[in-house]
Image (cartoon, rainbow, N blue to C red; front, top):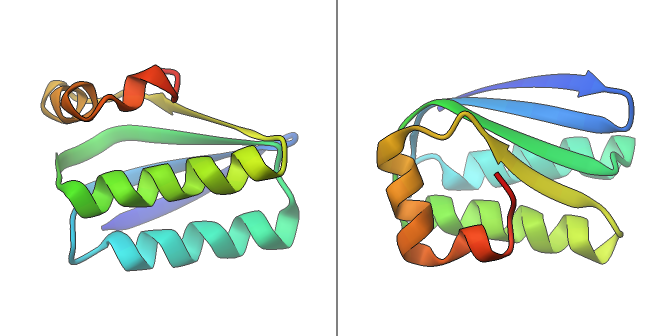
Length: 100
């Protein structure tokens, strides 16, 4: 899983590429949390354009960042979600709490 971080004012855009699964979820959590804790962004934008697979560990990584941002009054949104991953988000009910 490759991650690219792009600061944009008080927001951080995280572009993910590869599979967000049990092999990569811990690294994704750790790297995003490090950036959020260090720089105090108000919004986290996940760019899913390069994600071709996601399992429940990936869902957990996204939900965990949502909870972290919510506790500090921030927001999370998802962009460029591929059809396969969009279906996973729909089945999990995540679109009810995280905007696209």
